Length: 55
Image (cartoon, rainbow, N blue to C red; front, side, top):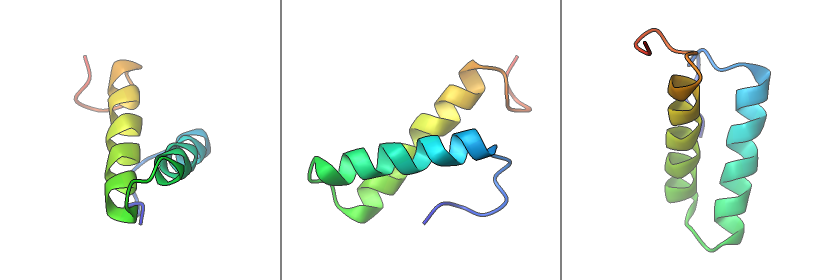
């Protein structure tokens, strides 16, 4: 389950769901798929300067 109140935009939420579904289709279990999706979205946010700590 995606963490609540994580500051993600609707675009990032859709990205999370898309990555999660892709990981599930590749045979990953639910928890692993969610972790990969969240880490990927957070890394993308940091790279694009969308987080407080990114500079």
